[in-house]
Amino acid sequence: MKKSPALKKSSEKKVKIYTTPTCTYCHLAKEFFKENKVKYEVVDVTKDQKFVDELMRKSGQLGVPVIEVDSEIIVGFDREALKRALKLK
Image (cartoon, rainbow, N blue to C red; front, side, top):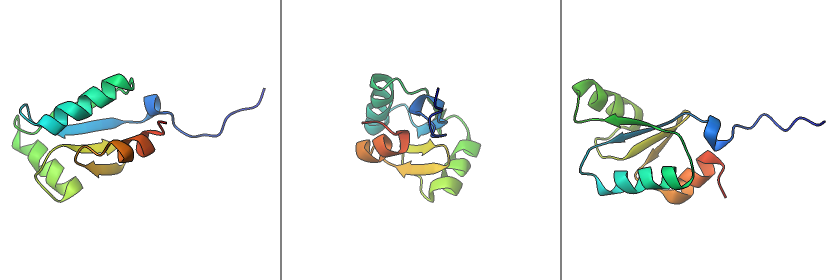
């Protein structure tokens, strides 16, 4: 039996979304993850200043959503960028 290449499937990638409770695009991104069965971690930046600092360090801005797929940073809800990063069709 042949082994497939060592490419991570979307289910194996570490996904983190920096969000706020009232962010419409954050909600759209989470729905996208659910529809595509992508496990993700939510970081609510309103809960602690350290999350805001982390968001700034990674993306260089304060706007949300900022989505981290493994080490790739995607600013905003960019469906096509997410599909590419997660290797979805």
